[in-house]
Structures are given as C-alpha cells and as structure tokens.
Length: 190
Image (tube, rainbow, N blue to C red; front, side, top):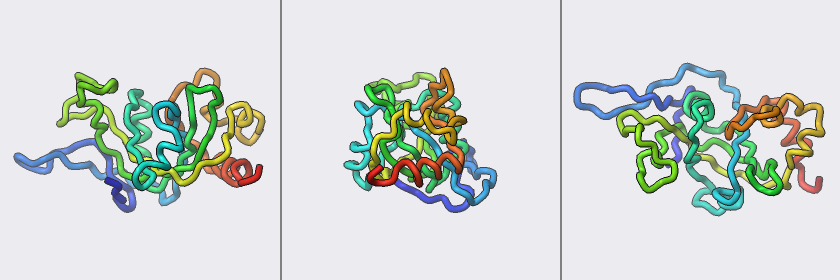
C-alpha cells in the first residue's frame, strides 16, 4: 500500500500507455528535493491521531476530501516523506494533536466509487477519478497545541489555518512554521 516513487514522485492524472492498456500515473514536474510541510485536519470522531497510531503501520488513507484545492494539494504537491501537522478539527478543543508524514504517492480515493459511502460521487468514474488521496503515517502524538495558543505566537501569524474564514482541510505550512512548532512547541514537558 505504501509506495515510495523516488525523486519527483508520480502524479495521479491518468494517461493511457497504449492501445487497450490500463491507466498509469503521469510523471510529475520535478520539485526541489526539500520536504514540504502540511497541516491536515481530521475530525477526531472520524479519525483521530490515536486511531492512526493504532492502525496497521500507523498508516491510514486520507479519504473523503471533497474540496478541489485540498485535493490538488494532495494530488499535485504532496510527496512521500513530507511532514504533516495532524490537526483535530470540529471538536471541543481544535488544535495540533500529533506529527505525521505523507506515506504514499497520490492515488484515487476509492470512497468516490462506493455507493454506500457518504463520500460517493456519482460523477466520478474509475477511468476518470475526480478525488485523490495520500496515505498518512502517524509518527507521534503530541500535547494538544490548541488554536488559541497558535494565535499567541507572532512567528505563526501567517499560518493559513489562522486566517479568518479558512475552512480548508489541508493547508501548506512553511519550513519556518514547521520548525517553530516542532522544535519549540511540541517538545515533551512543555
């Protein structure tokens, strides 16, 4: 299930490889070797950091994203090894609850084809999927870093999650924000 596609990764946009052949991933434009960082929101009633840590290989598919911008982040920009701030949302105390990483290349979200799923999309076709996902591997649970505390640090003032009206479930995080959060805020005992 977890695949490392090597430098540049693979893009989920399907292309045909020849007459009667199956769809195959399209190579991505090259990106610098530097890791990217993301904040990914999950409702803890549906999938919490504890749920991911308890999953086989502490890895789950990030199913159910139905926003085109968030989908595009996964499909076009995420690579194996990218850092993830695992954020609990739509709960009594929203905030960063753990550290994770992108564990697979993007692939079609199977829930879009499942008529029994609440994420079913009747317009999606196996040969032309609309929704993509990546697998996410939890690295560790951290103390909860609530939204109110994130807002208190001037170093994080430009984080997209802190912008008024932002409801995206996936947002990029700068290297400076990632470093500040992981090195200063998520240390044990703080």
